[in-house]
Length: 301
Image (cartoon, rainbow, N blue to C red; front, side, top):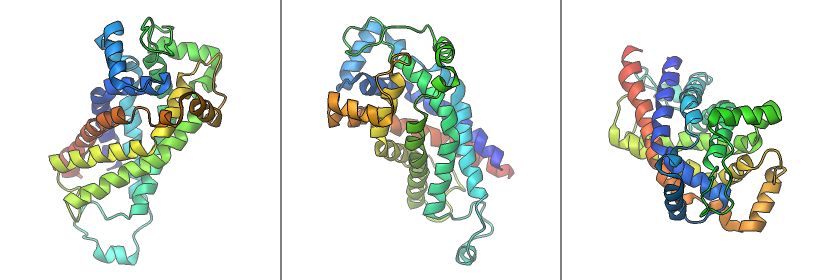
């Protein structure tokens, strides 16, 4: 049932966001404000802005996380089921009593890319608002490149961007988001499926296993994020940029100016924070997804 993929994706998105947003705020500040030390960001943010500042910009992602991941997981699962029927060789090795057929590496990667493409048009404006809010440091004098507090909340931020720049302004960074998310989404599902198959040779989606799902989901998240971290840095900088007086005119201009001002190290900024966030967030996301698919949807399929 394709509807189950969408429902399970909704649960995966909400649970992952709640776990990972504070760490994501630290990562974004490292990338957008050019700060090398994660501990410096954490200590300064807590001292000058308080504990809840780590949840800045969470409202919009929280409202949209269910929809976004519902689209992401739902389109992925639907795309797999819509693939052309198996070759004769696959069909001869396929257990007709199993509810999920074996898919090739290329099929999994391609369907993951399709899922990534589908969710980008939700991700881009949501990330834009999130990053604008996360990089508003107000009177936090310890963070260089700090931004004055211009927005009272996510909806005011959205309204201001739309009033000043229309729908185009809400999709600033769409190009780099597409470049970032499409291949990384394919890699994400591919790594997850391969690691899960090592734990459970054969049809590994018929039963829900806590340990293997945690390991597979967490590692898949870390690898897929690590692969596109430089692109994520460029996206964070472009979306944190002043819309009225932008520093960056495009992706390549952002790359050149970031390299000139911060050196090559800027494109690995936030790596350890990203790893710290990616494992638990994606482990929890896949636990929610597989838990619903195995225990709620498949028994009634």
